[in-house]
Image (cartoon, rainbow over all chains, first blue to last red):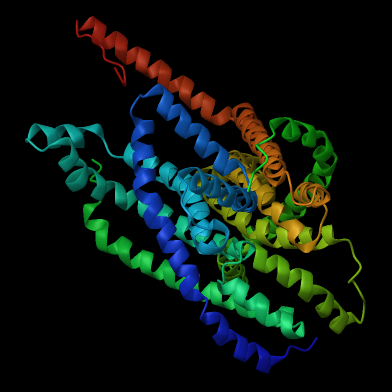
Amino acid sequence: MDLDLDFMYETFFKILGGISTTLELTILSLLLAAPIAFYMAVLRLNDAKISSGAVRVYVSFVRGTPIILQILLLYSLLPSVLNTIVQTLGINFNVFDAIDPFFYAVVVFSLNTIALLSEVFRSALISISKGQLEAGLSIGLTRFQVYIHVIIPQAMVVALPNICNITVNLIKGTSLAFLMTVKDVLAIGKIAASFGYNYIEAYIDVFFVYIILCTIIQVLYTAAESKISTFRAMHV
Amino acid sequence: MNYRPFDPSFLLQSIPALLPYLQITLFVGISSIVFGSIFGILLAKAKLSSIGPLRWLAQGYTYVMRCTPSIVLLFIVFYGLPKLVDGLFNYQIDDWDRSVFAIITLVLLFGAYVSEVFRSAYLAVPRGQYEAAVSIGLTPLQAVIQVVIPQAMIIALPNFGNSVINLLKEGALAYTIGLIDLIGKGNLIISQNFGAYAIEIYLACMFIYWVMALLIEKVFFIIEKRLDKGQTLKTVQTVKQDKKRARLFLIKGVKFHGPGS
């Protein structure tokens, strides 16, 4: 088996150009998902029957179905739903041409990440003892202040390794965005390959790019972990 | 433009048409689980071995697999393996069934995931168990097989169940290399209807996957409860201790507050 090394070398740098799309997709999805996921986690911890049941079904559905099906479903569903909304509002706007598929990708990956993050936040919040909240309230902080200054910093320490996992999985998951014609790392590799049928070379390039990307992310998270470990809850 | 409304009856109708293809999905999934577990055991063994290079190789492999999107690996296997085999052995495997390539990919991934599960479960069994078994005259191999591994299996079960569900979900990618499994058939139905009913078909597939995931979760939960002999003993003991303590408190005239009250 002989690989076209010149092609591999050239394509590698072309593919690097796709990293920005992959990272934008990952970071945007995480940032959009985090507040909603946190709210869901708090909903599940409070004993609100209906809302916590709804959250549980949502989480179970997202975790029980392949992400590729979520992409296929939402990519056929969202444009027509948006179109119907636009039509009923009477706005003259062509949904099918004007909206970048990147937008749909962000929606899909956010919806997916919400479910995964809410579980992580929930287990992190459970690990903080109720005494922390009571102590905070007793010295006159509001509930909101206690969450911001006392509970979230401690919960973050517990949640961070799992958030790192979710981020790495999300980066890997965004490789499926090529199904929505988003030009990320994998899509660029695929396009470059299709000119001369150099599929293996291109995919090996893509493979290396993802390994580098995930390694950098994991190094960053490890650094963040050691930075915030000062908030580690004391267990007596 | 007018749109056809969502048609739930088509969703229900399509499920019987899709279900026969579930067996292909399951065939790919189950073969990957069986071979992947064997591969995972070997990897875990390598990670626990005292030979440095072997350990590094297994750890490096797991790290690389953790960072590789399954679809990229699937494409590399699907396009690269026939070329590799052709180059090495001068043998054509292009016409092999696509499920073979899907299974090879999933075995490579699943092996890496479960090797971590097996390794940590093995290490979670206290060393004293092995020492006690050897001290009563079992050979080291017997001690590992009859004492350590049964306990490690119970510890590994929940994570193993999670890995199985993840594997099943990753198996859904197989349609991208042209395997006619559940989703492959779904796509065929959609194209037979000229692109209509996509939402209904995809929803039907999702429900099938969801039910499978819930079932697997349930089955693993039941097995765990069944096999949980050591743990159950422990809980019985703690309950007894709690009752004893409660009685002590009652004698002293102090009201006993159990945990959580």
